[in-house]
Amino acid sequence: MAEKIDRQEVKHVADLAKLSFDDAALDKITPQLEEIIDLFTDLQKVDTDGVEPMYSPTTEHSVLREDKGVRSGQRDELLANAPETHDGLIKVPAIIDESEDGE
Amino acid sequence: MNFNDTNITDLHNQLVKGEVSATDLTKESFKQIKATDDDVQAFLTLNEEAALKRAAEIDKNGIAEDQLLAGIPLAVKDNIVTKGLRTTAASKILGNFTPVYDATVIEKMNQAGFINVGKTNMDEFAMGSSTENSGFKKTKNPWDLTRVPGGSSGGSAAAVAAGDVLAAFGTDTGGSIRQPASFNGIVGMKPTYGRVSRWGIIAFGSSFDQVGWLSNNVKDNAILMQAISGLDKHDMTSANQEVPNWAANLDKASVKGLKIAVPEEYTSDAIDDDVREVIQAALKHFESLGATVDTVSLPHTKYGVSAYYILASSEASSNLQRYDGIRYGFRADDVKNLDDVYVRTRTEGFGDEVKRRIMLGTFSLSAGFYDAYFNKAAKVRRLIADDFNKVFKDYDVILGATDASTAFKIGDKVTDPTKMYLNDALTIPVNMAGLPAMSLPAGFSKKDGMPVGLQIIGKPFDEQTVYDAGYVFEQTTDFHKKNAKLGGQN
Image 1 (tube, rainbow over the protein chains, first blue to last red):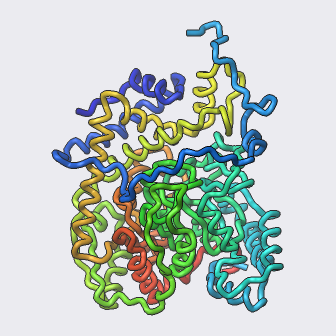
Image 2: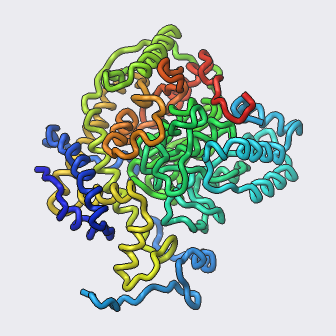
Image 3: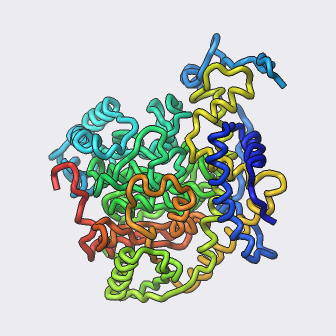
């Protein structure tokens, strides 16, 4: 059965979604999510016994193409969209935590 | 020149005869944009230099009689990727993103010789019903600048209503073409799910998203839809169905004997009186033309909004994982480690509504809640689709209001997400079932004078009957002839 979402749950879901909310933002979003999820609980009234879930309206079958690499020849254009590059590669921050409060 | 009072066929004939050039039309479009867009704010990016260059090429090559769309200036919603032209989905997280390829629908239109004048404003990632959720600017309704243009294709609708272009691309996940068409007194069509390729559409809810057109009139819409439809090897949900020439026989269309169903849920007390009055008159008009009109029930309509916001948000939370600050788009400054890049980039880059949807979706899919929310909603989706199937056994089309109200005031609903979500109650069920549906001008509110849209819903892949019914209604009424009073040429 459906349950309510509280501040602790909001923090947990934010962790899963790679988002963070400070205290002021939590004060705002928690009651909003609560209200929307409250609306969702309406669905529990619908009798769905034996109903097949519908995940897509498509009637097409999956068609797999041949698994073959294709060169687009667009390396420079692709790299131009990257936030940071170095020697023709995408630069990312250190994966090892350098902060003092590291976990 | 104001594009409100013309159409593709007339402009094409003038182009072929050499009475006007593609360059002339393109210049006229930018002139109108410059005259109106300080007020309306429909565009995020203008493509003036490239558009004029393209027009000159087309003029140089000449336009043949069978090149109906060559040299016609149109606008593109900013969640459709355009090679070499900034594409943001109105999100700061994509503020500096330049696509390296064209969406299939753009490629098809390029081959047809259209002129892309620019990218239109929208709710961020198409999440919203008012275009107030854009990360960049608020678009105004050309009929009344204190009102919203609807959303999420609000910029496209406003650009057409302001006479900037004949038509503009939109996308419709829960009503994002039809509701802004209704609010702006124009035609908006969402085709059957699978009719048009989604390749190169910035994904929101992949089992709902569909590309379509906002246009001045029904025939232009049918012509443009044919040009972008069809199977695409890049989108495995695109349908292997023949694409008819929907516009070819519109002039012979009739609604005599057409069996129209009107769901009681679409004319209930939840619909504003002024809207209901216009819709009732439209139904009487269809009867006077020889159609039969019966009241039916789509009993699961009231669960549509809840089921939709669970499913579409779940798909969005998955689709939007790709915005991680690594390969493209915005990256937060002063990040300490990789997790920090993800979290800070997303927290700073996404707007409030997008974060709310990601949270709702992640919650609905998370351990312990999946069955009660996501799977329950998918079962309700089946019941909503079955409701439609039952009605379509006995009827040709389903008619009702597109939206419960006319365009609301800017700021009226944006602070109350639940109220904003309920706004889409009449358009959402169509996306749940993947059906084709159109909104077209049906009259004006006695309360505020704003346009009211009539929604025509068809059977899967039966766009023809929807276009036929819409065309007959349009040609036997005058509502489409009244235009927004903006641009100084009405």
